[in-house]
Length: 126
Image (tube, one colour):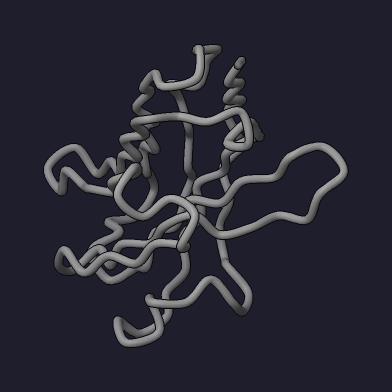
């Protein structure tokens, strides 16, 4: 049973940066698809980025392309989300998720994700 713990959220002004971390334990995630999702108050949860644990194939939602970067440290079993040029509309609870889907399915946020973290809040003020 994989456990995911997010950290790194906080409050920043527009244009600022934050780096979120997702530490995975209980299972080596090399064969998992790892994802970052976010949910703003009153809105549906949306996918932000994915990375396949086995290699560095990444996928982003259009609204964060060029601003956010997902990466991983396989030694530390940790996935990161570097967020630059933050905008007020990036304000949300950010969640890390993992799923044992095949690598070729890791370029989609759809479907059921097996494991979720507890979330970390990101607030961007204008």
